[in-house]
Amino acid sequence: MFTMSALSFTGRLALVTGGGGGIGRAICQVLAKNGASVVVADIKFNSAQDTVNMLPGSGDHLALAMDVSDKNSVNSGIKAIIDKYQIPPNLLVNNAGILRTNPFCEVDETTFSDVMDVNLKGTFLVSQAVAKSLLKQEDPRGAVVNIASISGRAGLPYVCHYGASKAGVMALTKTCATELARKGIRVNCVMPGLIETPLHEDIPKRKTQKVVDSTPLGRAGKPEEVAEVVAFLLSDKSSYMVGACVEVTGGYMM
Image (cartoon, rainbow, N blue to C red; front, side, top):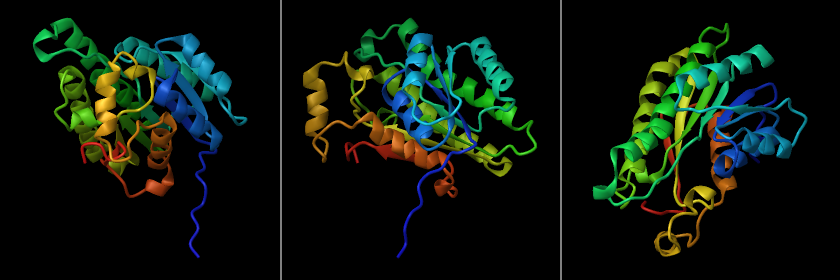
């Protein structure tokens, strides 16, 4: 009888951006539970430290203040990781993101730029910094998972800037995957639907309920349900998956 072995990240070093709460915190917890040392990066250091304090296992974890939209902050963060662990992270989750909801004709340039800077440029900056550091190693093997969104595929109202940024994350995922796969770095992404996180707290209840009513499972997802998929994509169990964008939506918009 075939049985699937448990995930194991023993000896692996993971960097999770936006790890101070929500999906990011759940990802950190799943990775730590399965043996990884986890660097929790967040623009709010106290939130990152709170996550570290919750992590299970005996791994050597680290809280890090990082603004993913700022190249200097990203590079300083990667340097701090290498200084502490003597290696760059070989697992990366680009989870940091912001959500703004505005009718298309009311989105101002600053709001549009802010969303793109964090969600898309931040994914680019951190991915590039980690990839460059990994490729300097004798064994550059690693795995990256980017957190996109179903809104990057579907034309959902009031999130033109968010949807555009997440569509960009999906395209960036595929390009990076194509270039880095033969160098030993696999890149994939996850497209969550409506998940119970603080990111969605500002959305009116009637709008989130409409999404729930249109979801075959009839409920919003939990951060842990996304985290388990992310862990799978980071693990050797997904060794033949490259450039995939996996929906975790409860069937919404399928």
